[in-house]
Image 1 (cartoon, rainbow, N blue to C red):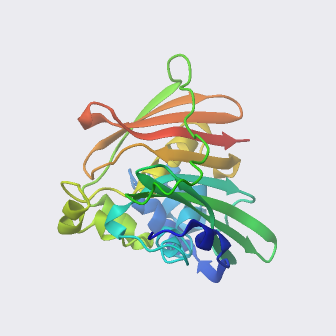
Image 2: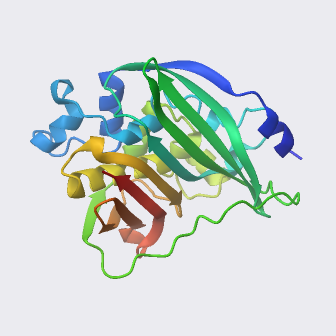
Length: 285
């Protein structure tokens, strides 16, 4: 069996030093669509180094995302075909506001392995701390098609009841044709997002957008629309990737807001509102 759950869970964590500066933060913000209009003061806080505020989802790519999803696929007990891999979900806990420049230690391990029958789910946990203590914790749920069925733990259900009533806000965000090509420069070079032949081998008509790009775009929309642009209010952010997104499409974000959290449903407008992100919650102060 390509995935040995016991071996993966028993493997020693991998630690490495990561660094980032304002250029990495600015590239990430541009990769998720910031800077339009280029002279808008609300956008300059994402793009101009003298005013830079760090969107918390930058944590998913800080230090080029290492250790991350691809690193998790090389852990002991894990030997899978990259073409069968999809990012199933992501959760992020922010312990302190992210600085625009930093050096930290990132420690990654396989925190759980679930048997979904026709697929396996690996939970890759990355904990990041600097000299002052913990900064953030990332959990990436990695969905591997064709690798389940060994009789293991199916894991918890992450499906949430949809919010009642109409959304408080509806926001549309257009995705540029070159969005995936720009976003991949943040560190995720999976050819699924750039190589048409690889995308076809993986079962897609053409390259798809990174799930974490949609993830970042959605958080930015919540912060800008409902949190007054205050990135420091975000405490945690989780989602399930419910469907693919193609560059050139339009994301529709439906938001249900309370004083402590915002629930979001994201869909692709051009494909009859096909679900993209589900079970999405931003907890905030």
